[in-house]
Image 1 (cartoon, helix red, strand yellow):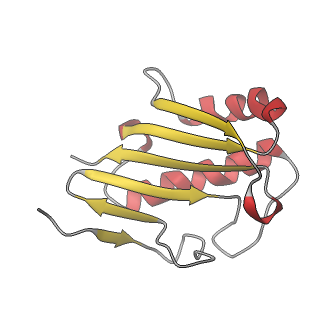
Image 2 (cartoon, one colour):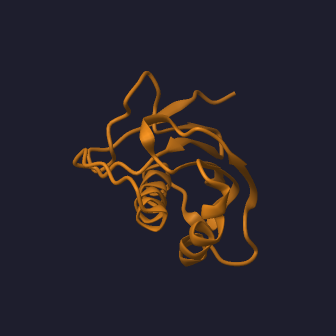
Length: 126
């Protein structure tokens, strides 16, 4: 079995805890929950559309560093502080993903750090 390899890059936000932005094992990329932090460390909080843009742009960068892409995402998990924000989130989501959409779960939770949303994903990189 292939070794698991962390994904990192200076153009990605630094993790705020003991985790990697993503791990690669074989042909799969497992992306940690991403919140709206820009690569320079600047936080975006308070507007679900703006947070979604930052998070999904970071997801795209993480996947590219891992040798994958948004087109190869198999599954997405979305955590929203307020489920009423789902329509606004979906508007931004559709700018990044197109049919056939990845499998997806959405949960209403208390997102750490005062953010409105967090997104994690699993992608193929074959």
